[in-house]
Amino acid sequence: MNLVTDLGTSEMADLRALWAEHLLIVFPRQQLTGADMLRIANAFVGSSLAELHPERTAGPCSAGMPIVGEWDGYKDGHNWHSDKSFTTEPTAGTMLYCHATPVVGGDTMFANMYTAYESLSPKMRGIVETLSAVHVRNLRLRPLYRPTPDGSDTVHRSIAEVERRHSASGVASVHPIVLIHPETQRKALYVGSRIDHIVGMRRAESDAMVRFLSEHAATLEFTYRHHWDVHDLVLWDNRCLLHMALCDYDVERERREFTRCVIVGEAGSEPLDFEDDRDTLQFES
Ligand SMILES: O=C(O)CCC(=O)C(=O)O
Ligand SMILES: [Fe+2]
Image (cartoon, rainbow, N blue to C red; front, side, top):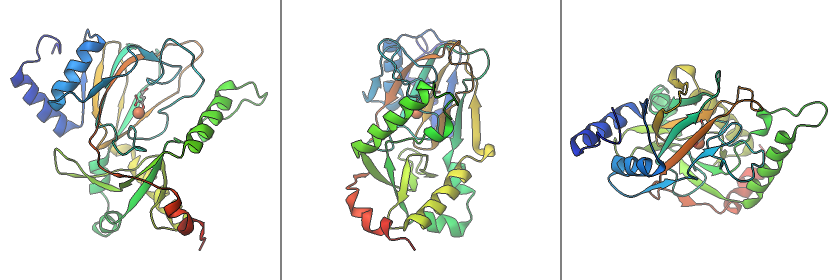
């Protein structure tokens, strides 16, 4: 379909139902401006909650970097996450419109968190439903990018610097590990690499549980891998999907560019005073 000309009210109702059922929709071969994307995003939620991120964004690997202006070498999005989970109003939906894509690679992975939740044993579901986690800004990208042996790798250094800044910012938010999706009322795991720890657990307990949940969430059978074609528009639901951008192409020679538009989420969690949890965490069992 052509999203600019075919967005009548009846199509919109169908598309909303499709989105709720499939979590992610790919619209190939679209000709869109940033303003079109804003309109489409707002139509999806029946409100004006959408925000356009810098009109055209790119970075050697990420959709999240302005194409004009300084790129500081930080690659965001290259670890499993749900957008802005470290805030009290995490992004409900994200839209990317592709302008340029590498010949090979640069795909985006998505993982279905309804399935991740539903495939746990009833016993484990009962346990995780009682848990909440602290999400921090830092996406832990450093282990994914090894510095070059001669130390010339500015990317690794900038990641280290940005991660230090993100950690120092102290921004954090607490969310239940199991979310009830506000539209579908289905339960979904809400995890990702931004989890620092599980509230009330000791560090060793929390690390073991988070490691298990992270590995489980990324089970290949729960994933869809999108290979981008120019002019694809993809809309995904951050309340029941995790995503990760794959930086597996020649970033020096190839371009990867998007326009990005997000649907701001509802407030659904508490801001966290990190100090609340310090005592429990420091007590090693
Ligand atoms: O570049 C991508 O494929 C996705 C980047 C990302 O995490 C985002 O846009 O939220
Ligand atoms: Fe993201």
